[in-house]
Amino acid sequence: MTETVPAAFPDAEIPSAEELAARAHVVVLPLKVRFRGVVEREVLLLDGPAGWAEFAPFTEYGDAEAAAWLRGALEAGWQGYPDPVRTHVPVNATVPAVPASQVGRVLAAYDAAHTVKVKVAEAGQALADDVARVAEVRRLLPGAALRIDANAGWTLDEALEALEALAPYGLQYAEQPVAGIGGLRRLRAELARRGLGVPIAADESVRKESDPLAVARAEAADLIVVKAPPLGGVRRALRIVAEAGLPAVVSSALDTSVGTRTGAALAAALPELPYACGLGTVSLFAADVAAEPYVARDGRLDLRTVAADPELLERHAADPARRHWWLERLLRCRELLVSGT
Ligand SMILES: O=C(O)CCC(=O)C1=CC=C[C@@H](O)[C@@H]1C(=O)O
Ligand SMILES: [Mg+2]
Image 1 (cartoon, rainbow, N blue to C red):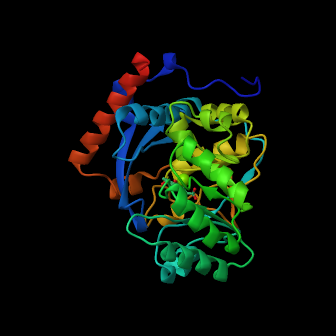
Image 2 (image 1 turned 60 degrees about the vertical axis):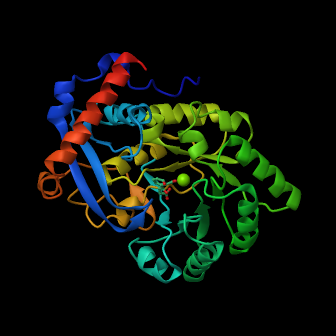
């Protein structure tokens, strides 16, 4: 534990169920392109006393996993963020697993793309699709830093074959090429044996493990990806980075402007920020909740207050059945936090 990391949102201050329900807004936002298999994103926003907060665990997540996201939202809405050490943060463009022919259109949604993350290993696609997509990004942006994210979609052999094929395009790192801490460890060892110098980043092996530090302890990654919502908020994520002792990349969870501001708070408070952050997903949305969407200018996000706009909340409000589903989930997750399970 480092003394420089402030304490996380305390259990004793969890708001009442009535207060949470009264402050909740549920919206459905269309995406410009399919991402993680979805074409619209459901999000619950909380109008907290310290600011707007986003509670949007993906709908397939169970309550135990989603409860950490609520802790993060309560921090944002009721406690506020720790002091920043910088006024702006660099941001990467994110290219979903689109056909190579659509890469230009995706990149055009970003004001600038000094760093690009390309999704690979999508179910139903072949390595040739990934190579074509990465090659197209490289063709369009010869000077950009380029990283890939496989979301654990490859086996060890597939990862080795893919990284051999993709390394010539110049990879800053490969994010979660295979599943599991053991898998990442074996891959790193084999890459070293082959002299293939692609650094390995752990994402799912940080945010979905019961112990987010296990990957660092096992020396299974060169860097870790940290996202405030699944790690239980900005302060908890800061602590994990401090304890992991590995370089960290801040990323997000297909967030609206409100959630992106939380990611920016994490990036702004980290003592070191060696990599551009995955905080550009607002550009993947066809609609947002902020009147002035929180998007990067010239590849960087300036820290500023981000608030949801009442008119946009109204326009994109979820239907009563989905609102009910989200409120029930919110309150079940609150119960989990209160009971400490
Ligand atoms: O890191 C980025 O560039 C954007 C965020 C991003 O890629 C993700 C957001 C949400 C869910 C995940 O599938 C995905 C990721 O795996 O990092
Ligand atoms: Mg990832």
